[in-house]
Length: 173
Ligand SMILES: [Zn+2]
Image (tube, rainbow, N blue to C red; front, side, top):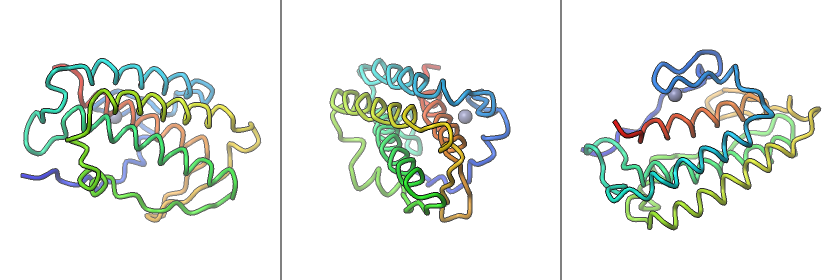
């Protein structure tokens, strides 16, 4: 069985505690997000050192390596979205098909050490980008093609949940 694409909108995580990973986006201070992201990237380092990092727990769930590659790319995608909306209030985001990307980029065959290093670089660049937004620009808006509207603040919280949730996905059970 292949990976089943996650087509759900996760926009509700901005208002409620995630019942799976326990992240409460609404309680996160914007100022804390850069450090939270760096801590998250640190967390992936040991995950990627696991000898079985490339093994899927079952056929329909990504391996830790695939999740890590996804989070690396998430950092990049959200940084680009952030820069776009800071540049143009009300900017529309280009669609990003995360599942197609995972297949096209062969996430499961990437080198874990390389993914670990690149994830750290991407997270640092994205943390810096969020930290650099001036207070008056945090209400700038960006639109997703499904009609969801984000501000810089809600985009940061939404993204941070995503990264945190995936680290939860690969926790040792
Ligand atoms: Zn969650």
